[in-house]
Image 1 (cartoon, helix red, strand yellow):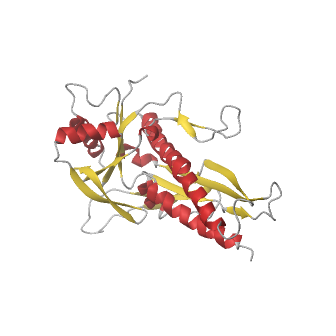
Image 2: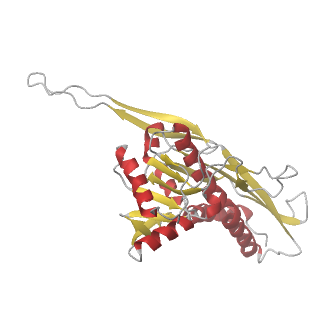
Length: 311
């Protein structure tokens, strides 16, 4: 009996989308896309509300009329990435195709897709902060563990900078493992823990003053990355590397509701050996749209501490 490739593709697509959000260290950003209008393709519409402040109450005429403006900013998902894979029909029959292809897609997403999306989001967030160049929101030239420096003080200074910009909401921090180690050593076993939820999954993570510390691999903590196109002679491996202007991030703190992220697969396509015109093999086409945005009025809610010197 021929396998139902349409149903299989739909099942894979839903599962892969859910797992991507759960396994990305930046998966918490996707929860902020709840009010974003997305109907497919590359464009999204992000709501932006503006109000007016208080005025004097008049005992004769009463309240002054206030204005409420709700607009939708149209943004584009600039990241359009994909790969195709083939499983030879002699190696995979219809009986075990689902199990084998699920393993291929799961491993590909875990080892390549998720790290790239995390690295892209973190680098873009850092780039937005660097470009805005708001006073006190970036610190350069701090190496964790250097004598005479306090990792805890550096972290609390970042929190204070965000609070000073008027953002008193819940915060989340991405921290390089070497920085987290210094915090743990400095607090000598007194570091807190909190329950942190993303993608419907609750996990326990270390925290300072209730701020979750998301340990993020070194190769995702860059201020800039270079995406390989997968076809140029020096870029056939695909994926990403640290950008030529990229710097190492020690930690980045952001208001939990500020970054708006979206990641969606275009329709996952699966072709049977009879449908595949290129080879006698099962073929799977994987394509993912994704991006992350932060509105101009929220850029002050992000602080970045960078290991390298400025320049």
